[in-house]
Length: 552
Ligand code: ATP
Ligand code: MG
Image (cartoon, rainbow, N blue to C red; front, side):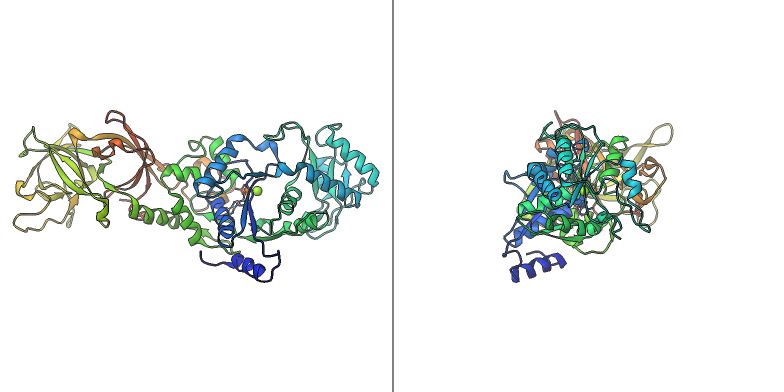
């Protein structure tokens, strides 16, 4: 059982008092107008997690009431993402649109009890009549239409006799209510728009507050858990549920939405990133979407762990990106086999090693898990090391390679740099080195101390790879709040760096999605395998340590 929170306490109390006959029914109701993001994962873990732990049910229901913003690509991506996280793996997917007939009947009930009326003000007039936070609204001149007239007009709205926006159905509550949501909210509007499921059967569509509360009520949801911005909508939620003959009375409880530093978690802003081509689609590995994180190499377990660690409260707080990164780091530290990859290759010729020889040296796959076994790594006269493991003019206490100094090649030999070859502009092009033939396995025969150990890849067996290194997408912690600035100027120009790397041959047969630690470089996921030893593509999921702000 997961750690408790105030919502779990409410659920437990309700079970104890038999409030809903002991039933626990939650729901996850995404609107298919974008891909799911890590904030949705918080809601998914809460809703499905409660159902799992209290022997209840969590309904996976599309809130598909606004066909103009919704499409099938979004629907499919949402289903994939929820299932990838490990939930809703049965065939049961529900839709608010499944209830369009029932919702229409509820609207008729409201008209029959004089609790709803057809209004014929224009959208602008409706806005004007609504009043403000400080001033009450005014009644529409159409507010006192008779039940018969309302029934007639509403039926004709449904039958397509009126143009879009000419009439709406409104709840008759109170135009002077302090809570603006109760000032005769619109329940239905006319919209000639084909729907992904109901096609052209309807030209009127219910609005969120009406459709959502009553879909919950139809399904027998007990605990309707949503984010804080719906707190002011709760009186309307309750009004809808109380004023029709719905079979159940669900209760809404709010919790604070996830906000994460250095990114945005709003579908509007994420859509803008995609539409303005500031990222490479919804599933770009820099995006905080579930599919972006999946492409980046995150595991479902790491995301579930994150949702568990951030907890559920009513308080706003922005979570540091490091919290999410630590979750995947811990997961991969345990699970990812180690290999060697050189991100910025510098060729090295080992002058005292025979030109025609290749040795296969044993290497451990995991330092803490011997059960993951060993592999053989090829070694020969020409190898690559990482450019930043060499300094021509090193500071004191530099333990990597420099002219005249000795370093340990991981799993191989102790090696000393004897010469530096440069191009005409003075850039280091290649190193000449010698190794101690007695030091196979990296152990000095005379017990002398060699502090530095570096990774390397054998040139003749190297697999070339494009390696994408990712960093924070934005340059500031709360880009969503930076009003008035051009979004494109807030993007971190170093959020993606592409490296031409070389990797040891171990990855030759690896399948896409395989995860590795490249020793000393971070955790990587194989996006696309090499063909004929060439052009694998990797994404760096996360660095080995939290290095934000401490660039080296
Ligand atoms: P956005 O604000 O990104 O447009 P939304 O609330 O409109 O999100 P929905 O598809 O309606 O998106 O959300 C489905 C469920 O996920 C809702 O119950 C919503 O409260 C929840 N949810 C959305 N964003 C977050 C978040 N950042 N943290 C926690 N829950 C969230
Ligand atoms: Mg929403």
